[in-house]
Image (cartoon, rainbow, N blue to C red):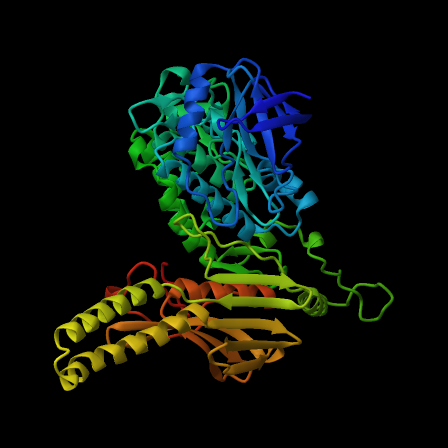
Length: 580
């Protein structure tokens, strides 16, 4: 077996060949199954310099998940000649085992065949996680360049991983750019159509076009945003590429192309997403800098996902709460909704004697079918990872879903470092006063005792932050809320009694406290938990709702006046859901 060496002269033994391309061969590693070696057919000094820059400036990865398969080390022959690099073995990564191309998720027939529970919420989360990975790449000054569906893997939990990263355009931060030499026309912005990628320094704005195309395909049943039906008599070749070059977005009225007949309506997308696509594909056609960045997409997708609600008739139908009625039900024929045909009241199969009787009979049959459908809906037990815009998950929240039920553990950690700093400052000041005033015990008590009391209080509070946990569990037909180990106050609610869960804001002068409330079926409000971070409370609320199959519908609450909204704060109201 062939042996190569890392930069630090560590031997690496190449095992079986697990992949082959036009540029390189991928081998398993005998010493470490979690890594593989990519060995170039014709390694070049330019490739070595590019990989060194990649190792020096890796992108920020989400905690607990490899969202970007980045080189781990360089490989050399025994004589010191550059050969390739080490990277993560995706087959050995437990989180991403079974991951497939993003095509199998945005293509509706493939998704229905292999991932029938992968609904619109999963597709929103996939788009969100894709943007978080892209934001990590752009954050280090790099550009993906070759944005296309074959370089993106998705897991059944909507986790996204970017692969073939050695083709990215890399910035070594000393003035050199190692260009991306390839690209796919369907994801290439208009200003780069027909341009040789080997001769152009790409910008994040170029990536932003291709990334928006992928988001559109995810949320619009696989349709490319510039695919459409040609209504003009001119010969244009491929409609999608002509649309990209000319800025002809089919979902805006024009005289050349209209949307495909079977494509979903553009209006089903959350208004924030509609606006983002128009910025990218219409305004961004001639002004690339207008195209939304991954960070902007993250905010819009979080807002859109928070506005999703579950259909009353099919638990796998999820849609935005700004539309009237489920758009997925509207596209299904009545025969696909499991509604039985109306039967004659006589039981002989003959038609009712009058149109009124026929109408009443059909109405009753449909109502019975609807009730049966509702009764057959099972709780959704999927647990979607919650990556945050800064590239990290909400690692102070741990969600476990198993045969025992749902468990959510929340830990407050944000104040610990600040408390430690204040505690240290008070201690130093107290020691200083004590040192200079040792002549009198009374002076020491007067000046130092208050400081030590405050320090003791801060230490106790810090210990609470470090060790205290708020635990929500849903098992044995009950929702439990418990604080431990410092406090063991327990609240229990029978699941069968819960009609709604919602997040509510309460004013306390200038401060805001967000609370997680339940509404019992008798209408009584019962407070479950109170916290000042809306995103935290909202996330826990959605996890519990999803498990209990409680629709995420806006209900009454105490409202934040418009002049006091600060972006992340949101309140559920009967009329609307405020922007998050």
